[in-house]
Image (cartoon, rainbow, N blue to C red):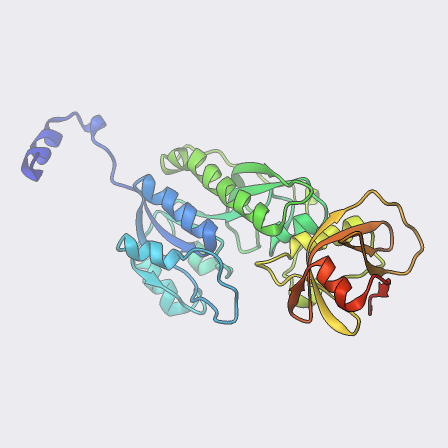
Amino acid sequence: MSAHHVKEDTADLPQSSVLNPASSAVVFAYHNVGVRCLSVLLAHGVDVQLVVTHRDNPNENIWFESVAELAALHGIAVITPDNPNDVAVVEQIRALQPDFFFSFYYREMLKAPLLAIPKHGALNMHGSLLPKYRGRVPVNWAIIRGETETGSTLHYMTEKPDNGDIVAQQAVPILPNDTALHVFQKVTVAAEMALESVLPELLAGRAQAAKQDLSLGGYFGGRNAADGVINWQQSAQEIHNLVRAVAPPYPGATTQLAGKPMRILQTLVTGCTVFGERPVFYVKEGRAYAICGQGVLRIVRFELDGVELSATEFADVYGAARIEFNC
């Protein structure tokens, strides 16, 4: 049917039957959550006027998908400001007069002048079940602290991080041996599901929001490689949680053994109940183990001095004697 015919047919419909123009949005996004949630907006016909994202850091392990590439595929303008709150950026976005802001794993806080722009509010997707784990790297923190559940939360943005009213949540399980990558993949799907479930109501102005009880959760800061150094006086379970929380593609849990740097990549908690022994590494019957402050870990994968070794390869060089960690 030609455009002329469409126009004639639409004009003959009752006014109540004519679809409203698509809601417009400026999207601040990065990482896999950014890619999947931007895809949800496009699937629902949201007019994404501009995508604000980050330039990839050459010093960072870029294992995730590109928001900029998805935007380019759909012909959406992209900017990568160092500071989205710069006056020139704020004015560029204000001129678009968007209905909504959406922030999906964007790493900079949006300040009051920006947040005041969208007609129907600014919303952020956070990778935890708020009010738990507000702040940085919530997936990693949830694993470190032994949680068995996390998820994604869509909430209205304020100048304070992750404390606005909640619009939608989706929970996912954390299994005992899940790594941060496993959980992040689940949280990405949870984010997509949470947004998909509420977006029609949100665009229609009918979405309900619930205030957070901030006393039920806490704020957590960022982490760096130094936070991955193992304290062997901790229990086997605590060390196992650290190992899986920072396993590749994250920097990994580290220690020193035989005077060399060691990276622990994968562990399993054994049923051994050892107390009061010095932390040591040893090989027995072709498997590697570590005695911890409480309990014993099986060391499934590890690197010594930058080289990944099997337990047998380690024993061929160092023997089966117990070696104390340099900690």
